[in-house]
Length: 566
Image 1: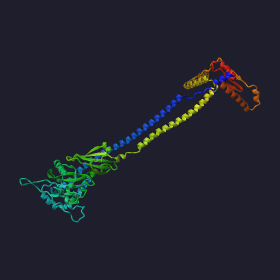
Image 2: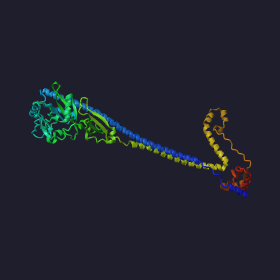
Image 3: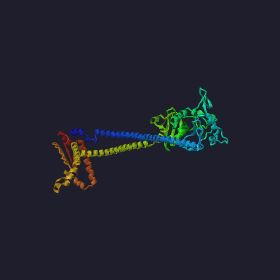
Image 4: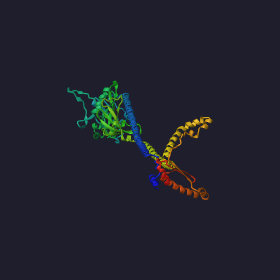
């Protein structure tokens, strides 16, 4: 009794079976999950940022590419405008010369009856605001007499006048000087008492007709910019484009009651003067057509309809700077200076030279500095970067969700397998000792690998063999199982076979449920005692209970105590 108790104290519980996964394996799996998830998040974030950067860069490239195309278009158009202006002025000047010759008029005393009609096509081709015919005059007195006698020819077509009477022209050549609005021009005496001839360039005919006829006979050579341009025109006998000129400062707008936008910088913005020589007999320059061209009107239609708005800064070598807005066929004057340039777009500056090879620019060369605008860039700011970025982020988010869901399902499946494996291990543990159980499980794992590795080749060998060879190939050899029997020698063991006396006769007259209840009750008690005492139950066959002791301990003295207690 005492020996059995001691044995029971040493063998209180059944062997504990390890989990399917070790702690290290669980840690490895957990870290692998974290790493995979981190890689997914990192890859998704990187792809999202790169997508945003690339799509934004694509929009910027489209914006820059379109701006360059607008610059090229304006460069080509500006040259075409200058060429068209030259040929239109040439045709107009030739028509004037031809009319004067056919009507047998001698310069400067020449008046073109169809001047305004011919001027309309010239203005339409060049965008000129006002066009004047100005002959070169050396005999002031003769000219004053001629202009007064023929003033009806230059005032009669004034359609702007609502009065039945026509205001007279200025009775003589004049210019602004010494603070006076109108000053008479006479010949200049020499030191020896004689007089020397001085050349003048009075306005004679105008298109459209001036609101105040007193502008006629104004000496254009009294304007410094025009005088410098006339000098170049006489030297080259070719057309000249001046810098920006405000003729109202020379004429006196209030005193002469000129239209505010006729010659001054009104809504049309700054103007330059385009001088084209009139060649008379002996290839002598006898006069000039003088066109006042607003730059806003001159550069209208520089871009195609519907084009984006860009900023144009007009700079000339005379130091004048003016800013315009060009959008489609409309050019709008913004104001003087270049303060309208957005610093964010200064790096995109492009320069276009305005002019033609036939037009002399010895007075001032003109450059058009072009810049994109915020309004233009807004046309290329779309939702594509956000959409593409959202799609890429969504793909990676979906992948992460799928991974997490798959991992959860896999973990759930693993837990189920772990429970099943634990149950199986418990069952195996109840049937075999620990040493046998471990070797049985290890051999099963190795044999499963061998089966996977060799089955295909052996199956091919079996199919290719003849009938006699097939008969010699066992099923175990065919599937690649070459297991050895598990047998260990235990020299000090006792095997028990226990039968219930009279069980056969008793069970023959009982219900199956009664028989089952009896066996279940008896064998459950045996199992508990065997587990407690360390006796290994082998099996039960009917009413026979088979058990063995001495498989674990090498100490033979414990065997007797095990059985005594059992």
